[in-house]
Length: 241
Image (cartoon, rainbow, N blue to C red):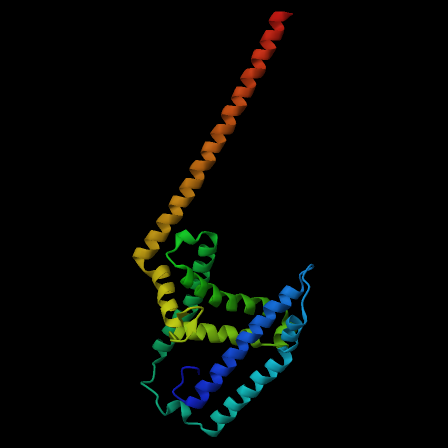
């Protein structure tokens, strides 16, 4: 709803998004708190203690949105464009789900070796930020009871990927979602970019294979020299006797 033409809804949605970002920061702080040698200061603890209040604020904002929608049942149709057909809806859902897979593939490929994909530092940071929302959701939902009580990570994931799939102009870690979506789809689907990436992967594998062969040959030669030296020593000892 952050992109809604309705000013009230878009404002409330942005407020929710900002508070969800704060919850993500608190989740990272809670993870940091579990580290054995970490010693938090009072500001750090105060930040974590804000979690229940922020969750309550999100619920209150969502309640305002729900009440507004209930009171204005025709809000969504005021500026509605042409209705999508069943096939178009299906295709958009498929594209959105495919986008998640493409995002994760590129993220892990870049983490393995960022030279394999032509993303600059800002683009890599934006991709990592969206992927972090996905990881946070997975980690949170691995604890069924906790995830059911606190669904903020699910909401953050839904927001990030809805913004990505819809091509929102809102900015994610330095670049707009619509620009990031184009980058992901281009590098994951465009034949020229896919061919270049596959060639880089093949070159890297070939170089690794060549390096291993050279190392194996080096070790084999060293072993042969060792055996030769041992043979000469034994021969010298036999001749001396």
